[in-house]
Image (tube, rainbow, N blue to C red; front, side):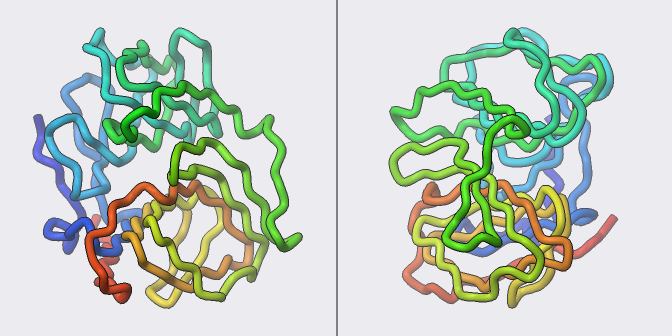
Length: 243
């Protein structure tokens, strides 16, 4: 297996550090499966099947027959992913619980955001959500909307949409958060984050996010990261472009 090539400056990042990986700062790598490339994002991953990152399927590629997984959480970012349940277009959110082994393939090619081996104990639900067909719910302001995708215990996964310029107030994440910027952009006191950015905010971290001029659409998972530090002013590492 190829050794993960994490962005410069993130190789030593601890689990209780704020990490932001912007487009161009991490490289695609070949996987052991022909036609499938991977981009590891989280240096806290290990060799036991745990993985957070992007996968890219070339046209006609497929995963071979495999042993039951420890759980797969996926968001189709581009193209179409197929399995026994059908063909899933961009915007589809999938959860394959521990013990499952779906036959994933892509006749036309696709790009996914993937989290492997990170289901909490007891979370055995299987989900398939076409977010293009689900209705948005208004938050406290008419300028912000959310789309719940999955809840289990303290863990919450959803899509968030903020209109242009919304935000700026302090936001704290007691249980940590991960963010993937899908469209538009946002900024906080640490920098700006265009589409394709992945961010990990450790438990207790806070920031002041504000949507850009076109607004912002993000995938967010919160409440799933363990508390590893009592210092709320956690270190920050943002990967700059190295490609």
